[in-house]
Amino acid sequence: MNIKQFRYSADNLGYLIYGKRSAMAIDGGAAGDILDFVEANNLELHYVTNTHSHMDHTTGNAALLKGSGASFLEYGKLIEDGSVEIEGEIIKVYPTPGHTDDCIVFYLDNTLISGDTLFIGKVGRCFTGDHKRFLESVKLIMEFPEDTEIYPGHDYVEEYLDFVRMFEPDNPDVDPVHKSYDPNHVRSTLEQEFRIDPFLRFNDKKIISILESRNLPCSTESERWESLLSIM
Image 1 (cartoon, rainbow, N blue to C red):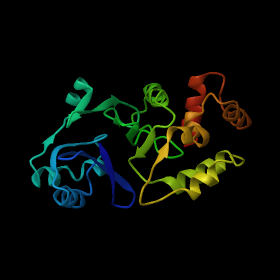
Image 2: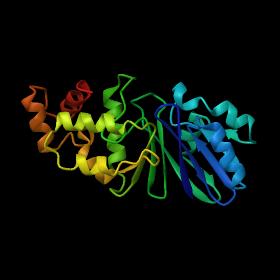
Image 3: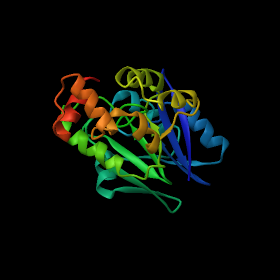
């Protein structure tokens, strides 16, 4: 399977997963570009779906469905099945509630399309208010192999790396990550996030020390997670 990233609006990122003949669009706001790519490469768009139901991620659905013979994959059906098959390849689907109740991520070929659950340098905002479930979703992602490539739902890289610099000024890994940033191909790895993202390091002694210095609760994992979310 191949993955192509499409940028649209100011910072949204959508994706096309495709093989030799078939394709699936995820968060296809760049509908025109996606349909042009599908046609130019003699592909058939089979499915259209989203990482979650926020309007900036669903805005391309109608145009994609109208411009192709694709079927829309509903959230509930995706969760029930747990996977999507394209040309014999299995794309795993995992629920990751927290940012929204209906957040999901897609995993294939050691690649995670993470939507607004995990960005580069930060996690998404917890609009549900359910911090416990959001922590469980993040911990699920942390169980993937460290060389997993992360493809997020937005390009917030510069803003979020500035946040990491503010929060942990002496982190030596931030500048190399910034230098490798390519706005035409926004990606990270889980291993990289374990080095820079404080929201994946809630049990790290360095992060605990920073929380202590800010007089924030940090005695338990839950307290540390709550404290990190409070400074987003």
